[in-house]
Image 1: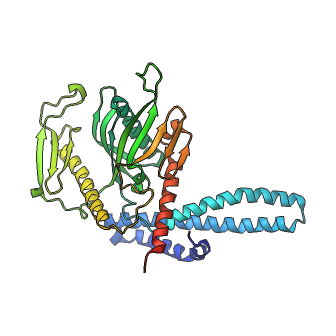
Image 2 (image 1 turned 135 degrees about the vertical axis):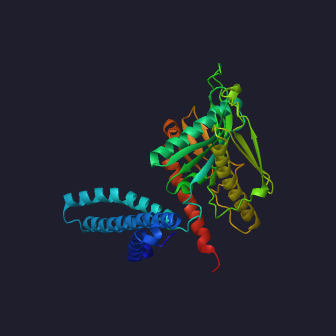
Image 3 (image 1 turned 90 degrees about the horizontal axis):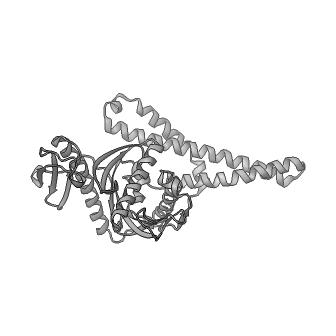
Length: 365
């Protein structure tokens, strides 16, 4: 665990760094460099969160000590009762701030600040799985709306009953990957389908992949490595047939990765969207390769690397959601599917922070 007193004592250092970053934000050299401006802006927001949490934590600790002194002295019974009530409020608040600081101060995943490409695909369960995949897509879009992120659908293949066979969409904003990366894996649903006449519960699944969006400087894609095919787009059941060859399929020969996009009427726009997805998959492919080569690296309990694993179950009859990686169950299924996933997200981030902190503290110098 973090040595909280040492962290509190370091508050002046964090405040100084925040002042430095604020000053750099106004530097013309930074303002003229979009990438540098974005990087410094993100670091400044992060440092501002750290300073705010530490100031609040230090203030709460001081108030808690004063309240305990009043209770211990016991000179005024009425005052002591008020102090006891304040202690009951302060202790959980301090514990919550400690958890937040653990998340903020643990060494970060270098991808945490990035925007993401989310891929949701229906798995076992036929049409019911496609309907569930659509539920997951809406859940992430509504969550993005709650926290002020932007979403853009890059590719969508619907089922016959308005479900989703496959959808690929971009989510952009502050620290998107840091929260959504834990959604990668197999999501299982247990519910009675609308078409079920005997009330039997069916189990189906959908898979989710969350990829950090790659920047041009990270992934070099050579034109000679690409095969680009164009074809006519078509929707479910032959609807929305495009009479021109605007759909694009890009094959990256060295990796064998294939991406296709057909939602736009413009071939140029479909190609641009396909390249965004391709770059993200290539970055993920390279990172997965590096991860596999470092066999000594500890596997995090909440790692998003093993996408074949069942990570979560949505049980409609019992209105509960259980995340199997951390053993957390919440009983607010409707609100959860409406995008209220902060409790689960916070718990996953905390578990990951603690896991990485333990790994960091045991590393050889």
